[in-house]
Image (tube, rainbow over the protein chains, first blue to last red):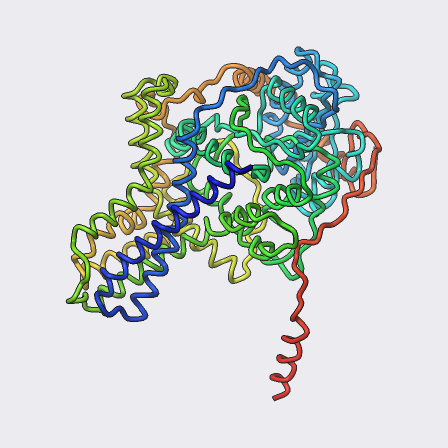
Length: 580
Length: 45
């Protein structure tokens, strides 16, 4: 705990120092010896944005300092506690859901742990045809080994409280029958040995309230998806180590691929409905962060363990889907401002909530800063008495670039020496992929900045984003669809280019990395959503991992061949289910 | 099998209810009465 506190202090102090130093240089550059209030305003924006950038980078540096932890042995026998494996679904692909449950069950049966683990499908599906398919899926699932008495399915009439309400409904109805619950997402997949290991860890430590694994992304097909998959596979072990080192006993909960102690969860995590209307009030959307904080508030240990391998999920395969998910998360995280002063929360839990909030607020902050700088360039003459040397300006620019790029490049250097790069095709292939990841994420960053800024504005204006179903399988976005979603970005980006070329041509080149990708947003989104199978870029061990993912793919392919007979319910079947 | 609140319920779950008390998350609004008083005065004026 002392080490965690020391690391927290170092990361926050380091980020503050960098932010003050950057702010001071910025103020002297834009305001000279006598800055006006507008210069101070711009500087405050800059300093706040730099603080959060620097703090994010410090997680990477701390992760790099720690040695890669060895995964614990998974051959620990059978846990004594009983675990319910919860699979909440909301209008999902039923074939994929069935295949995931079936292969995890087969693995647990093969390891002789079947009687310790039950599977519960918690359906909140609203589409009648999907609900009918789910019943057919579940009846097929009951034919799996040792399924009878170990697999359950229920669908709620109303989706009260969304996913958090779905799980609460399970706990209040049947939680007393289990010691632990392994919470999954509909796209989650976990190695049976990892599931057993997590339950054993709960057996071993009676104070452990929640154990979170770090899911890797699998199944990406498109350029965007594979870039994301590579980035997570290559960089997240380091960043997760950084988060884990700073967490102490108040680690984050990400809502899935985590095991919880049911008595702890029931006693600490009953979420109230916030006063007022959505999006500010109502049900808590980003419930996972809050539940983790509540467990820690009551003295339970909440741990993120990056050594737990064999934990998988699927990611969005195009930027539109990514932004849709982000819109939901944005609304949820902004709602957390109501909880920052919640009674009894630990300091680090509050800081985590604040970080979640700021991860979205910094986007409009950057946008405001850019707009303010353009406005200043048009209306404000540059200070004649600029108080700093041009070298210092370059130093400032280099510092911001280093914050963004250095952790990634250091991960590469460490990978050269510890052999990690071999899993990604060797040093040359890894460097190629990493540079491509940096280029693509730089190109798409202004688009995400605009999406997030819009999401923040919509949330502040009280526009509820709702709860759109996730589209898990990759689909190509046509240029027309991309134009419909992002025409306003092209308009803003194009207008900014015209204004700058006409009024401040010197500034154009500096802001081109933001304005050009924004004006080309539909094209970039459409192109990056296309299937991209080249081995030249983004090779990673997550392309075709052996074990549970391979078994899942084979099982799903086998089912899909039998789809007409099994998956597509007949109209009378649908009618029966809807009537029931 | 039909249960209240559920559209479908296949293979009945164990009947083992567990209480999940609602947590207090919003800080007490200590000065709410003051704001109400000021707004009431302002609206009258």
